Image (cartoon, rainbow, N blue to C red; front, top):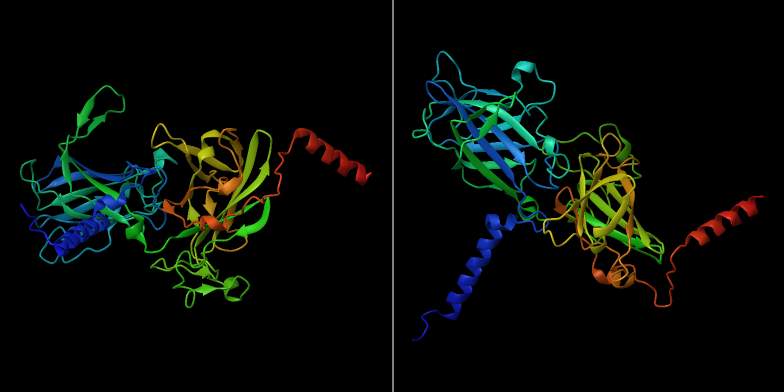
Length: 442
């Protein structure tokens, strides 16, 4: 029996499948954090005369992607004609048209409300547990206790029982920019709570979850960071690729580091649309990560990692840096950053997360003299795999704040000269060098 499909039909089918994978939530899959997501949980705590009171909790289960300033923005569409009577711990950005209400005026009458977190320092009677952090949520792998945000909402003109309530739909999440795709709300088993004395369990009257996943492809068409390399065994410095983050801002929205504009008052003031003001560079990236192979010992080798900010309008709080390299399975010491191995697949330990030490360097300042952080990493060699040949000493992947950075082409990596003899630095050599310096001074 002959097939009824023509070559054009086959091409169309393949094209349709490609488009589906490109624009479906499957694109959000992250191989270094396969189960990472943000889960938004609605717990109905009580029924009211015309609706319900719900506690809404946002849990960031992503290992190394946090939500920084100016924080999260959550939106949805009501299934019927619901209104928000009151909110605690958050607020909507617009009230909408509430003119049909005479006595009590709702907090929001819009069919598609947009909700933001309250700022720190609001009056106590406006606070809710885990609220009021300006929308900033830590990554789960960095600080689990700060990876949650919550608020309370009183909904009216809604269902008043498990059978009559209609779930909100079309959820959107900005964190703080685009990139997140949210699935539909799904009813799940009611959340169980434990009293403070831990002797009694209570539970929500109804619970539904919304799961949101991140895709760098949806967040931006260009990378937001790049990587450069250097080593002690080669004088060549491999820079970031030219226009690694796109050069569309080079004509209108970048300034030279030595210009008067870079030092004028107010240059670091953020814009409402969070548009960057970059230092003019050949790569035009807000962030550059530099990986320098610094020293070679007999049983160890040493790397220096530096992160530089080229954005005059942005400082990065609670930043994270993720690197993938086979020797990260044997990290001996990290000197100025905190470090945590990431093991999404139990049999492979080649990925780790670096992040700033609290109150020391967890804030990466704006572009300028203070706009960099750096650390050194001491790694123990595996004699079966260790080599300086063919760029082995450089990372396979690098992520900054959850976004993958552009690496230089492999054929531009600092190579090991064929005549070079990279001898390890022994303890005797170090002692002899120190004695020689002392004798020359005397």
